[in-house]
Structures are given as structure tokens and as C-alpha cells.
Length: 119
Image (cartoon, rainbow, N blue to C red; front, side, top):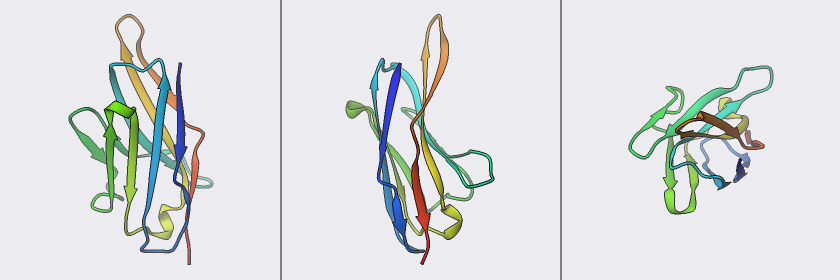
């Protein structure tokens, strides 16, 4: 099992910044992908950004504003969010996907952290 603990959500004004953190612990996989998804009320959960050891990808709606990074020594992924807009308001979930020979890919989710962008 992998446990994910998120932090950093909150209320921010439009144009402001927030940084989310997610620390993984437990049975860490040597091959893994970490990322952030978000879910607004009444909408599906969508990918925001994902990062492997060598690459990143972003949703079109956040490109140029959000930056995902990771500290492998700490098993932690970060999401720096700049130029926030009201439409970024959602619950943000940390996602961890780990691969192991014999069992394949396993997926884990954090508990979610609320991000509200409002004046």
C-alpha cells in the first residue's frame, strides 16, 4: 500500500499563487508516475499534470501557469500554481501509479485538498 498526504490548498484571489505538496509513503514502487487531478462540483475528475522521472505533461488549460515537479529522495510531488483563475477552483487530488513485475500497475489517491480562487 502507498499512502499519500497532500497539503497546500486554500483560498486565493484571482491572479494569485498556491503550491500543493503530496508526500508518498509505504510500499514505494521504483517505477512510478505521480500527478495531480482535479474535480469541480458536478464535473468529472480531470488530469491536471503528471510527472515521471524524465517527463511531464499538462492539461491544456494549465500550460504556462502550473508547474509540476518531484523530489525523488522525499517521494514528494509538487504543483506550483500561478496566475490562478476562478475556473481553477476544485478539489485537487494527488495520484500515484506504481509498476511492479508480476502485479502490473497499481493506482493510489490522496484525500484531496480544496483550492478556491475567488475575490
